[in-house]
Amino acid sequence: MLLQYRVLTDSIQYRIAGGNAAELVQSIEAAVSEGTLSPGAPLPSIRRLAVQVGLSPVTVAAAVADLRRRGVVVSEPRRGTRIGERPPIGSQRAPLPVPPGARDLSQGNPDPRLLPDLKRALAGTNLPLRLYGEPATLPELAALARERLSADGVGAERVCVVGGALDGIERVIDAHLRPGDRVAVENPGYAALFDLLRARGLTLEPVAVDERGMQPSELGRALARGVSAGIVTPRGQNPTGAALDAERAGALGAVLERYPGVLVVEDDHLGEVAGSPLHTLSRGRERWAAVRSVAKALGPDLRLAVLTGDRQTLVRVEGRQQCGPGWVSHILQRLVLGLWQDPHVGQLTERAAARYGARREHLLRALAAEGVHASAASGLNVWVPVEDETGVVGALSQRGWVVAPGAPYRLAGSQPAIRITIASLAEDEAERLARDVAEVCAPARAARAG
Image (cartoon, rainbow, N blue to C red; front, top):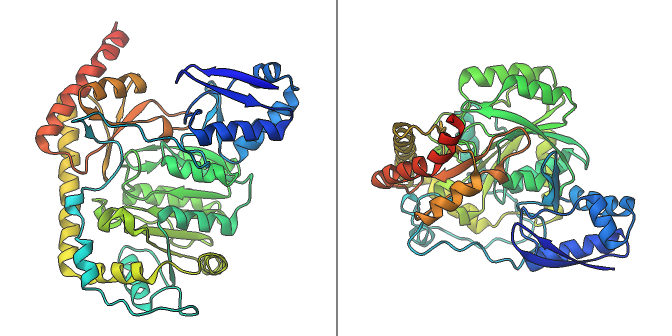
């Protein structure tokens, strides 16, 4: 049977064809791939969809459960079932356009002016011919990575190279977890991580965060519910900018000590440009991993991160890597090694961390002066709680600012907000943006006060 159903949020019509659960799944996936079902678009309730397509609620529920298990759709209390923000389906959907003349502060990108010149670095990099059968990780890069990680208190007796932070996390997850396992995640947290875990069939256990990271009491409750792993951002947390300090890391470590078998994964995706010291939770753990990406310091297109962890985790990740791609390009490894060894690049990284910190603090002060509460202890983003995400994002777009709505980063229990990337935000822009944020939020604050 064919159904034509209007998605009210986007005013898009799509057709669901389904004589059984498998056909319903194929139809919805096709609509996502074609771009006629957008991220966040709601689906009818199980009962309503069953009536409309002429199938039993049990059959429709089975189709939705399959889509949910693979991360195509998301179901939450009071929010119903909707297409995930980044469903694991290749799509022809075009990215949302940025209005002419608008400042795009939504992508989380570093400032290109604070990244090293890769053309110059490549010209000075020795690129010997590498063939099959050679070591997957360059020994010189591994030695330097161990040195850098050890300087931050992360025990790194052994490291391997992976294709970015999320690639490393996915390989660690695959080494230990199975579909249906529960994973403690930060809330708000990294949207792409949520999508990855859902696509692996894992259940998210949200743990509230404040400016100092995961709240110990909330983590304790999540662990008591039977999680198999916890994923923590020790600094530069995306989207809130939270960073662990020594006291909070100690409190979280004390909670984790009661659950020695839980896998702890640290995502240090910003590394040296986070703007705060690293306080690790990995010491003494039976099962742990720490991944550090070079994307924000050296350039997102390098697609490289170093991964360390307990011996069993590392050998499993390396073994699985051998069964697939084999290794991360030695050209990339040589390039990163050369950049890490270049004192001028080191100075640029230090300058980038300082600039990001100054820009972050300037926007926070400007927002505070306008009576707007916001948070960011480190990193490239500022998290601003608002009453109406969609309304604020739209109003700011009309004023020439493109910011990210908080919905993709939030799980149940978190409040609406917007995310502003400060990496390239000049001081005069920050002051104008703060005034605009205050003005577009003022009606909601006035209504609440009344």
